[in-house]
Image 1: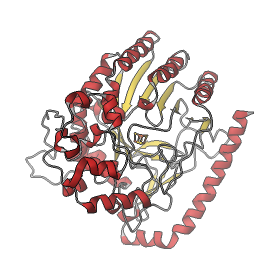
Image 2: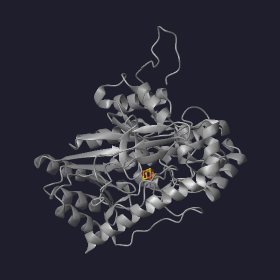
Image 3: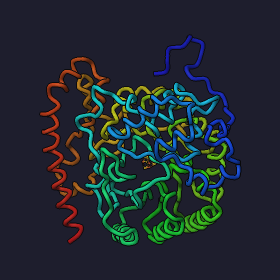
Image 4: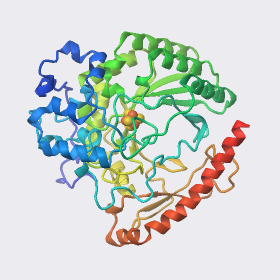
Length: 478
Ligand code: SF4
Protein backbone atom coordinates (compact mmCIF):
# COMPACT_ATOMS: atom_id res chain seq x y z
CA UNK A 1 0.00 0.00 0.00
CA UNK A 2 1.07 3.59 -0.43
CA UNK A 3 2.50 4.82 2.88
CA UNK A 4 0.19 6.58 5.30
CA UNK A 5 0.28 10.31 4.51
CA UNK A 6 -1.28 13.38 6.11
CA UNK A 7 -5.03 13.43 5.45
CA UNK A 8 -4.74 16.42 3.14
CA UNK A 9 -2.13 15.01 0.77
CA UNK A 10 -2.38 12.53 -2.07
CA UNK A 11 -0.41 9.35 -1.47
CA UNK A 12 1.34 9.89 -4.82
CA UNK A 13 2.25 13.33 -6.19
CA UNK A 14 2.45 13.43 -9.97
CA UNK A 15 4.94 15.70 -11.65
CA UNK A 16 6.12 15.69 -15.22
CA UNK A 17 9.77 14.66 -15.51
CA UNK A 18 12.08 15.70 -18.35
CA UNK A 19 14.02 12.79 -19.80
CA UNK A 20 17.80 12.94 -19.60
CA UNK A 21 20.44 10.79 -21.28
CA UNK A 22 22.90 10.18 -18.43
CA UNK A 23 26.43 11.38 -19.22
CA UNK A 24 28.33 8.21 -20.13
CA UNK A 25 31.71 9.92 -19.80
CA UNK A 26 31.31 9.71 -16.00
CA UNK A 27 32.52 6.10 -16.33
CA UNK A 28 36.33 5.91 -16.62
CA UNK A 29 36.17 3.43 -19.52
CA UNK A 30 33.91 5.67 -21.62
CA UNK A 31 35.66 9.00 -21.02
CA UNK A 32 36.46 9.43 -24.72
CA UNK A 33 33.32 7.95 -26.24
CA UNK A 34 31.68 10.38 -28.65
CA UNK A 35 27.97 10.95 -29.29
CA UNK A 36 28.48 9.45 -32.74
CA UNK A 37 29.85 6.25 -31.19
CA UNK A 38 27.02 6.17 -28.67
CA UNK A 39 24.36 6.40 -31.36
CA UNK A 40 25.94 3.61 -33.40
CA UNK A 41 24.35 0.21 -32.90
CA UNK A 42 27.62 -1.44 -34.00
CA UNK A 43 29.53 0.45 -31.29
CA UNK A 44 26.90 -0.47 -28.70
CA UNK A 45 26.97 -4.16 -29.59
CA UNK A 46 30.78 -4.27 -29.68
CA UNK A 47 31.04 -2.69 -26.23
CA UNK A 48 28.50 -4.76 -24.31
CA UNK A 49 29.76 -5.87 -20.92
CA UNK A 50 29.98 -9.66 -20.93
CA UNK A 51 32.27 -10.42 -18.02
CA UNK A 52 33.80 -9.00 -14.87
CA UNK A 53 37.03 -8.07 -16.62
CA UNK A 54 35.11 -5.80 -19.00
CA UNK A 55 33.08 -4.33 -16.15
CA UNK A 56 36.27 -3.60 -14.25
CA UNK A 57 37.76 -1.91 -17.32
CA UNK A 58 34.69 0.30 -17.50
CA UNK A 59 34.19 1.18 -13.82
CA UNK A 60 37.80 0.98 -12.64
CA UNK A 61 38.22 1.69 -8.96
CA UNK A 62 35.00 3.70 -8.69
CA UNK A 63 33.64 0.41 -7.33
CA UNK A 64 35.37 -1.65 -4.60
CA UNK A 65 36.95 -5.04 -5.25
CA UNK A 66 34.39 -6.53 -2.85
CA UNK A 67 31.62 -5.74 -5.36
CA UNK A 68 33.44 -7.58 -8.15
CA UNK A 69 34.05 -10.57 -5.81
CA UNK A 70 30.34 -10.59 -4.90
CA UNK A 71 29.44 -10.55 -8.58
CA UNK A 72 31.88 -13.34 -9.35
CA UNK A 73 30.46 -15.53 -6.59
CA UNK A 74 27.02 -15.03 -8.04
CA UNK A 75 28.21 -15.86 -11.54
CA UNK A 76 29.72 -19.16 -10.42
CA UNK A 77 27.13 -20.28 -7.84
CA UNK A 78 23.75 -18.74 -8.56
CA UNK A 79 23.32 -17.00 -11.92
CA UNK A 80 20.84 -18.59 -14.28
CA UNK A 81 21.71 -16.06 -17.02
CA UNK A 82 25.12 -15.14 -18.37
CA UNK A 83 26.27 -11.52 -18.24
CA UNK A 84 25.36 -9.26 -21.15
CA UNK A 85 24.61 -5.57 -20.67
CA UNK A 86 24.66 -3.06 -23.54
CA UNK A 87 26.28 0.33 -22.79
CA UNK A 88 22.90 2.06 -23.18
CA UNK A 89 21.54 0.01 -20.27
CA UNK A 90 24.64 0.18 -18.13
CA UNK A 91 24.54 3.94 -18.46
CA UNK A 92 21.19 4.03 -16.67
CA UNK A 93 22.75 2.52 -13.52
CA UNK A 94 23.64 5.15 -10.91
CA UNK A 95 22.58 7.76 -13.48
CA UNK A 96 23.41 10.90 -11.50
CA UNK A 97 26.75 11.82 -9.97
CA UNK A 98 29.89 9.76 -9.69
CA UNK A 99 29.59 5.97 -9.74
CA UNK A 100 30.23 4.38 -6.34
CA UNK A 101 30.09 1.02 -4.62
CA UNK A 102 27.06 1.96 -2.54
CA UNK A 103 25.39 3.45 -5.57
CA UNK A 104 25.86 0.25 -7.54
CA UNK A 105 24.63 -1.97 -4.73
CA UNK A 106 21.47 0.12 -4.35
CA UNK A 107 20.72 0.66 -8.02
CA UNK A 108 17.42 -0.87 -9.21
CA UNK A 109 18.60 -1.63 -12.76
CA UNK A 110 21.85 -3.16 -11.48
CA UNK A 111 19.81 -5.35 -9.11
CA UNK A 112 18.24 -7.28 -11.94
CA UNK A 113 20.85 -6.95 -14.71
CA UNK A 114 23.97 -7.61 -12.62
CA UNK A 115 22.76 -9.56 -9.58
CA UNK A 116 25.38 -10.22 -6.88
CA UNK A 117 25.54 -13.11 -4.44
CA UNK A 118 24.60 -11.01 -1.41
CA UNK A 119 21.40 -9.82 -3.14
CA UNK A 120 20.01 -13.34 -2.96
CA UNK A 121 18.39 -14.99 0.03
CA UNK A 122 20.36 -17.53 1.99
CA UNK A 123 17.40 -19.09 3.87
CA UNK A 124 15.35 -20.02 0.81
CA UNK A 125 17.35 -18.96 -2.27
CA UNK A 126 14.92 -21.01 -4.41
CA UNK A 127 11.35 -22.04 -3.69
CA UNK A 128 11.00 -25.84 -3.44
CA UNK A 129 8.63 -25.63 -6.43
CA UNK A 130 10.97 -23.52 -8.56
CA UNK A 131 11.64 -25.05 -11.97
CA UNK A 132 13.67 -24.18 -15.04
CA UNK A 133 10.64 -23.86 -17.31
CA UNK A 134 8.25 -22.68 -14.63
CA UNK A 135 5.46 -21.86 -17.11
CA UNK A 136 5.79 -25.21 -18.91
CA UNK A 137 6.11 -23.44 -22.23
CA UNK A 138 8.09 -26.29 -23.73
CA UNK A 139 5.45 -28.81 -22.62
CA UNK A 140 2.99 -26.81 -24.70
CA UNK A 141 5.10 -26.62 -27.85
CA UNK A 142 3.01 -27.63 -30.83
CA UNK A 143 6.00 -27.11 -33.13
CA UNK A 144 9.53 -26.47 -31.89
CA UNK A 145 9.45 -23.06 -30.17
CA UNK A 146 5.70 -22.52 -30.70
CA UNK A 147 3.78 -22.54 -27.41
CA UNK A 148 0.01 -22.90 -27.68
CA UNK A 149 -1.36 -22.22 -24.22
CA UNK A 150 -4.38 -19.96 -24.71
CA UNK A 151 -7.19 -20.81 -27.14
CA UNK A 152 -6.63 -18.02 -29.67
CA UNK A 153 -3.03 -16.99 -29.00
CA UNK A 154 0.40 -18.51 -29.50
CA UNK A 155 3.93 -17.59 -28.53
CA UNK A 156 6.57 -18.05 -31.25
CA UNK A 157 10.08 -18.26 -29.82
CA UNK A 158 12.11 -17.47 -32.92
CA UNK A 159 15.55 -17.44 -31.37
CA UNK A 160 17.24 -18.12 -28.03
CA UNK A 161 19.31 -14.93 -27.69
CA UNK A 162 18.86 -11.27 -26.71
CA UNK A 163 21.06 -8.15 -26.86
CA UNK A 164 20.84 -8.12 -23.03
CA UNK A 165 20.36 -10.83 -20.45
CA UNK A 166 18.16 -10.12 -17.43
CA UNK A 167 19.01 -12.00 -14.25
CA UNK A 168 15.36 -12.93 -13.63
CA UNK A 169 14.57 -14.16 -17.15
CA UNK A 170 11.58 -16.47 -17.02
CA UNK A 171 12.83 -18.25 -20.14
CA UNK A 172 16.18 -18.99 -18.48
CA UNK A 173 15.78 -22.62 -19.55
CA UNK A 174 16.25 -21.73 -23.20
CA UNK A 175 17.58 -18.18 -23.51
CA UNK A 176 21.25 -17.21 -23.43
CA UNK A 177 24.48 -19.07 -22.88
CA UNK A 178 24.80 -21.85 -20.34
CA UNK A 179 26.06 -20.77 -16.92
CA UNK A 180 27.94 -22.81 -14.30
CA UNK A 181 24.56 -23.66 -12.71
CA UNK A 182 22.32 -24.05 -15.78
CA UNK A 183 22.89 -25.99 -19.00
CA UNK A 184 20.58 -24.42 -21.54
CA UNK A 185 18.12 -26.26 -23.70
CA UNK A 186 18.98 -26.13 -27.40
CA UNK A 187 16.65 -25.99 -30.39
CA UNK A 188 17.10 -29.02 -32.65
CA UNK A 189 15.77 -27.70 -35.92
CA UNK A 190 17.48 -25.19 -38.20
CA UNK A 191 15.78 -21.75 -37.97
CA UNK A 192 14.31 -22.01 -41.46
CA UNK A 193 12.71 -25.40 -40.68
CA UNK A 194 11.51 -24.18 -37.30
CA UNK A 195 9.86 -21.10 -38.81
CA UNK A 196 8.25 -23.23 -41.55
CA UNK A 197 6.83 -25.64 -38.98
CA UNK A 198 5.36 -22.73 -36.99
CA UNK A 199 3.78 -21.18 -40.07
CA UNK A 200 2.35 -24.55 -41.12
CA UNK A 201 0.72 -24.98 -37.72
CA UNK A 202 -0.80 -21.50 -37.91
CA UNK A 203 -2.12 -22.09 -41.42
CA UNK A 204 -3.71 -25.35 -40.25
CA UNK A 205 -5.29 -23.83 -37.12
CA UNK A 206 -7.66 -20.99 -38.03
CA UNK A 207 -8.71 -20.67 -34.37
CA UNK A 208 -5.43 -18.87 -33.67
CA UNK A 209 -5.59 -15.12 -34.39
CA UNK A 210 -2.81 -13.65 -32.27
CA UNK A 211 0.94 -14.35 -32.40
CA UNK A 212 3.51 -13.07 -29.94
CA UNK A 213 6.75 -13.09 -31.93
CA UNK A 214 9.43 -13.42 -29.33
CA UNK A 215 12.55 -15.30 -28.31
CA UNK A 216 14.80 -14.19 -26.81
CA UNK A 217 14.48 -10.77 -28.33
CA UNK A 218 13.53 -10.19 -31.96
CA UNK A 219 16.20 -7.45 -32.17
CA UNK A 220 18.78 -10.25 -32.41
CA UNK A 221 17.25 -11.70 -35.54
CA UNK A 222 18.71 -10.28 -38.77
CA UNK A 223 16.04 -7.89 -40.01
CA UNK A 224 15.33 -9.67 -43.35
CA UNK A 225 14.55 -12.90 -41.48
CA UNK A 226 12.24 -11.20 -39.02
CA UNK A 227 10.52 -9.29 -41.79
CA UNK A 228 10.13 -12.49 -43.81
CA UNK A 229 8.51 -14.31 -40.88
CA UNK A 230 6.12 -11.46 -40.01
CA UNK A 231 5.29 -10.95 -43.67
CA UNK A 232 4.35 -14.64 -43.91
CA UNK A 233 2.18 -14.28 -40.80
CA UNK A 234 0.36 -11.41 -42.49
CA UNK A 235 -0.42 -13.72 -45.41
CA UNK A 236 -2.36 -16.02 -43.07
CA UNK A 237 -5.93 -14.85 -43.05
CA UNK A 238 -6.72 -15.83 -39.47
CA UNK A 239 -3.79 -13.86 -37.99
CA UNK A 240 -5.13 -10.49 -36.84
CA UNK A 241 -2.71 -9.43 -34.11
CA UNK A 242 1.08 -9.63 -34.16
CA UNK A 243 3.15 -8.49 -31.24
CA UNK A 244 6.91 -8.19 -31.52
CA UNK A 245 8.69 -8.71 -28.20
CA UNK A 246 11.83 -6.64 -27.74
CA UNK A 247 13.38 -5.38 -24.57
CA UNK A 248 16.03 -3.89 -26.87
CA UNK A 249 13.72 -0.96 -27.59
CA UNK A 250 14.94 0.15 -24.15
CA UNK A 251 18.22 -1.78 -23.82
CA UNK A 252 19.53 -1.09 -27.34
CA UNK A 253 17.26 1.57 -28.92
CA UNK A 254 19.98 2.20 -31.49
CA UNK A 255 18.89 -1.06 -33.17
CA UNK A 256 15.37 0.23 -33.79
CA UNK A 257 16.70 3.52 -35.16
CA UNK A 258 18.56 1.91 -38.08
CA UNK A 259 17.28 2.94 -41.52
CA UNK A 260 16.75 -0.60 -42.79
CA UNK A 261 14.79 -1.56 -39.68
CA UNK A 262 12.59 1.54 -39.87
CA UNK A 263 11.92 1.06 -43.58
CA UNK A 264 11.18 -2.63 -43.10
CA UNK A 265 8.81 -1.95 -40.22
CA UNK A 266 7.01 0.58 -42.35
CA UNK A 267 6.49 -2.05 -45.05
CA UNK A 268 5.06 -4.46 -42.48
CA UNK A 269 2.85 -1.81 -40.86
CA UNK A 270 1.49 -0.79 -44.27
CA UNK A 271 0.68 -4.37 -45.19
CA UNK A 272 -0.95 -4.97 -41.80
CA UNK A 273 -3.12 -1.87 -42.17
CA UNK A 274 -4.17 -2.84 -45.68
CA UNK A 275 -5.47 -6.16 -44.46
CA UNK A 276 -7.00 -4.90 -41.21
CA UNK A 277 -4.47 -6.57 -38.94
CA UNK A 278 -2.35 -4.99 -36.19
CA UNK A 279 1.34 -5.01 -35.38
CA UNK A 280 2.49 -3.76 -31.99
CA UNK A 281 5.80 -3.77 -30.19
CA UNK A 282 5.87 -5.12 -26.66
CA UNK A 283 8.85 -4.00 -24.68
CA UNK A 284 10.06 -4.73 -21.17
CA UNK A 285 10.99 -1.81 -18.91
CA UNK A 286 11.20 -2.29 -15.15
CA UNK A 287 12.30 1.12 -13.89
CA UNK A 288 11.75 4.78 -14.81
CA UNK A 289 15.53 5.36 -14.97
CA UNK A 290 15.66 3.20 -18.10
CA UNK A 291 13.58 5.66 -20.14
CA UNK A 292 15.97 8.13 -21.77
CA UNK A 293 15.65 10.46 -24.78
CA UNK A 294 17.23 7.73 -26.95
CA UNK A 295 14.50 5.26 -25.92
CA UNK A 296 11.82 7.88 -26.62
CA UNK A 297 13.37 8.57 -30.04
CA UNK A 298 13.36 4.87 -30.99
CA UNK A 299 9.76 4.51 -29.82
CA UNK A 300 8.74 7.56 -31.84
CA UNK A 301 10.49 6.10 -34.88
CA UNK A 302 8.54 2.87 -34.52
CA UNK A 303 5.19 4.60 -33.99
CA UNK A 304 5.92 6.72 -37.07
CA UNK A 305 6.13 3.56 -39.19
CA UNK A 306 2.39 3.11 -38.63
CA UNK A 307 2.39 0.21 -36.18
CA UNK A 308 -0.55 0.23 -33.84
CA UNK A 309 1.15 0.69 -30.49
CA UNK A 310 4.18 0.20 -28.25
CA UNK A 311 3.28 -1.40 -24.92
CA UNK A 312 5.25 -2.27 -21.82
CA UNK A 313 5.29 -5.57 -19.97
CA UNK A 314 7.47 -5.15 -16.90
CA UNK A 315 8.32 -7.62 -14.18
CA UNK A 316 7.47 -6.88 -10.58
CA UNK A 317 10.56 -7.31 -8.43
CA UNK A 318 11.43 -6.54 -4.86
CA UNK A 319 14.36 -4.11 -4.71
CA UNK A 320 13.62 -2.89 -8.24
CA UNK A 321 10.07 -1.60 -8.52
CA UNK A 322 7.76 -3.36 -6.03
CA UNK A 323 6.52 -0.12 -4.60
CA UNK A 324 3.54 1.98 -5.77
CA UNK A 325 5.66 5.13 -6.19
CA UNK A 326 8.23 3.33 -8.32
CA UNK A 327 5.50 1.74 -10.44
CA UNK A 328 3.65 5.01 -10.93
CA UNK A 329 6.89 6.88 -11.71
CA UNK A 330 7.67 4.23 -14.31
CA UNK A 331 4.19 4.29 -15.85
CA UNK A 332 4.08 8.10 -16.12
CA UNK A 333 7.59 8.19 -17.56
CA UNK A 334 6.65 5.55 -20.13
CA UNK A 335 3.49 7.37 -21.06
CA UNK A 336 4.54 11.04 -20.94
CA UNK A 337 8.18 10.63 -21.88
CA UNK A 338 8.09 7.95 -24.54
CA UNK A 339 4.45 7.31 -25.48
CA UNK A 340 4.78 3.70 -24.38
CA UNK A 341 1.57 2.22 -23.01
CA UNK A 342 1.84 0.64 -19.55
CA UNK A 343 0.20 -2.76 -19.99
CA UNK A 344 1.26 -5.53 -17.61
CA UNK A 345 3.47 -6.15 -14.65
CA UNK A 346 4.13 -9.83 -14.25
CA UNK A 347 4.94 -11.28 -10.88
CA UNK A 348 8.48 -12.67 -11.12
CA UNK A 349 8.19 -16.36 -11.94
CA UNK A 350 9.22 -19.32 -9.79
CA UNK A 351 12.58 -20.00 -11.39
CA UNK A 352 15.65 -21.11 -9.38
CA UNK A 353 17.31 -18.46 -7.17
CA UNK A 354 14.60 -15.86 -7.70
CA UNK A 355 13.20 -15.67 -4.14
CA UNK A 356 14.84 -12.34 -3.33
CA UNK A 357 13.01 -10.76 -6.27
CA UNK A 358 9.61 -12.40 -5.84
CA UNK A 359 6.74 -10.83 -3.93
CA UNK A 360 3.71 -12.59 -2.46
CA UNK A 361 0.31 -12.53 -4.10
CA UNK A 362 -1.15 -10.33 -1.36
CA UNK A 363 1.71 -7.83 -1.79
CA UNK A 364 0.97 -7.78 -5.51
CA UNK A 365 -2.72 -7.17 -4.75
CA UNK A 366 -1.74 -4.22 -2.54
CA UNK A 367 0.44 -2.84 -5.32
CA UNK A 368 -2.42 -3.11 -7.80
CA UNK A 369 -4.60 -1.18 -5.34
CA UNK A 370 -1.83 1.40 -4.88
CA UNK A 371 -1.59 2.27 -8.59
CA UNK A 372 -5.31 2.47 -9.32
CA UNK A 373 -6.85 5.86 -10.08
CA UNK A 374 -3.76 7.86 -11.04
CA UNK A 375 -3.26 6.84 -14.65
CA UNK A 376 -5.87 6.90 -17.38
CA UNK A 377 -7.82 3.65 -17.27
CA UNK A 378 -6.43 2.55 -20.64
CA UNK A 379 -2.88 3.01 -19.31
CA UNK A 380 -3.36 1.49 -15.85
CA UNK A 381 -1.21 -1.63 -15.84
CA UNK A 382 -2.62 -4.94 -14.70
CA UNK A 383 -0.49 -6.84 -12.25
CA UNK A 384 -0.69 -10.48 -13.24
CA UNK A 385 0.39 -13.81 -11.88
CA UNK A 386 1.43 -16.34 -14.51
CA UNK A 387 0.14 -19.49 -12.86
CA UNK A 388 1.79 -22.72 -14.03
CA UNK A 389 -0.53 -24.69 -16.36
CA UNK A 390 -3.05 -21.83 -16.26
CA UNK A 391 -1.57 -18.64 -17.71
CA UNK A 392 -1.95 -15.01 -16.79
CA UNK A 393 -4.52 -14.18 -14.09
CA UNK A 394 -5.14 -10.79 -12.57
CA UNK A 395 -3.84 -10.95 -9.02
CA UNK A 396 -7.30 -10.55 -7.52
CA UNK A 397 -8.70 -13.45 -9.54
CA UNK A 398 -7.62 -16.25 -7.23
CA UNK A 399 -10.11 -18.87 -6.07
CA UNK A 400 -8.77 -19.19 -2.50
CA UNK A 401 -5.62 -18.37 -0.60
CA UNK A 402 -3.84 -19.99 2.33
CA UNK A 403 -1.90 -16.98 3.62
CA UNK A 404 -0.10 -18.98 6.31
CA UNK A 405 1.52 -21.40 3.84
CA UNK A 406 1.51 -18.91 0.99
CA UNK A 407 -0.41 -21.16 -1.39
CA UNK A 408 -2.94 -19.55 -3.70
CA UNK A 409 -5.40 -21.59 -5.75
CA UNK A 410 -6.46 -20.60 -9.24
CA UNK A 411 -8.88 -21.86 -11.86
CA UNK A 412 -9.18 -21.31 -15.58
CA UNK A 413 -11.81 -21.13 -18.26
CA UNK A 414 -9.99 -22.69 -21.23
CA UNK A 415 -7.91 -25.73 -21.98
CA UNK A 416 -4.26 -25.44 -22.93
CA UNK A 417 -3.04 -27.44 -25.90
CA UNK A 418 -2.07 -30.33 -23.62
CA UNK A 419 -5.47 -30.70 -22.00
CA UNK A 420 -7.81 -31.17 -24.91
CA UNK A 421 -8.94 -34.53 -23.50
CA UNK A 422 -8.63 -33.67 -19.82
CA UNK A 423 -12.13 -33.67 -18.24
CA UNK A 424 -10.91 -31.89 -15.11
CA UNK A 425 -8.93 -29.09 -16.73
CA UNK A 426 -11.67 -26.52 -16.08
CA UNK A 427 -12.64 -27.62 -12.57
CA UNK A 428 -9.23 -28.38 -11.07
CA UNK A 429 -7.46 -25.75 -8.96
CA UNK A 430 -3.85 -24.90 -9.77
CA UNK A 431 -1.36 -23.73 -7.17
CA UNK A 432 1.00 -20.78 -6.97
CA UNK A 433 3.44 -20.26 -4.12
CA UNK A 434 4.46 -17.12 -2.26
CA UNK A 435 8.12 -16.73 -1.29
CA UNK A 436 8.57 -18.61 1.97
CA UNK A 437 10.48 -15.81 3.70
CA UNK A 438 7.36 -13.61 3.40
CA UNK A 439 5.20 -16.10 5.38
CA UNK A 440 4.38 -15.97 9.09
CA UNK A 441 6.61 -18.14 11.34
CA UNK A 442 4.09 -21.04 11.36
CA UNK A 443 4.02 -21.10 7.57
CA UNK A 444 7.81 -21.06 7.31
CA UNK A 445 7.99 -23.92 9.81
CA UNK A 446 5.42 -25.89 7.78
CA UNK A 447 7.60 -25.59 4.68
CA UNK A 448 10.69 -26.67 6.63
CA UNK A 449 8.82 -29.81 7.67
CA UNK A 450 6.81 -30.57 4.54
CA UNK A 451 8.67 -29.21 1.52
CA UNK A 452 9.75 -32.72 0.47
CA UNK A 453 6.26 -34.34 0.70
CA UNK A 454 4.59 -31.40 -0.97
CA UNK A 455 7.08 -31.41 -3.79
CA UNK A 456 6.66 -35.15 -4.34
CA UNK A 457 2.88 -34.76 -4.61
CA UNK A 458 3.22 -31.83 -7.01
CA UNK A 459 5.76 -33.71 -9.11
CA UNK A 460 3.38 -36.66 -9.43
CA UNK A 461 0.68 -34.28 -10.67
CA UNK A 462 3.12 -32.62 -13.07
CA UNK A 463 4.18 -36.05 -14.38
CA UNK A 464 0.56 -36.78 -15.28
CA UNK A 465 0.40 -33.45 -17.11
CA UNK A 466 3.68 -34.16 -18.91
CA UNK A 467 2.41 -37.56 -20.00
CA UNK A 468 -0.72 -35.88 -21.31
CA UNK A 469 1.52 -33.38 -23.13
CA UNK A 470 3.56 -36.15 -24.74
CA UNK A 471 0.40 -37.97 -25.81
CA UNK A 472 -0.95 -34.74 -27.26
CA UNK A 473 2.29 -34.09 -29.14
CA UNK A 474 2.18 -37.61 -30.57
CA UNK A 475 -1.30 -36.90 -31.83
CA UNK A 476 -0.10 -33.69 -33.46
CA UNK A 477 2.88 -35.36 -35.09
CA UNK A 478 1.09 -38.46 -36.41
S1 SF4 B 1 15.12 -9.59 -22.71
FE1 SF4 B 1 13.43 -10.94 -22.13
S2 SF4 B 1 13.98 -12.94 -22.99
FE2 SF4 B 1 15.85 -11.68 -22.99
S3 SF4 B 1 16.87 -12.15 -21.06
FE3 SF4 B 1 15.57 -10.36 -20.68
S4 SF4 B 1 13.64 -11.23 -19.91
FE4 SF4 B 1 14.76 -12.91 -20.91
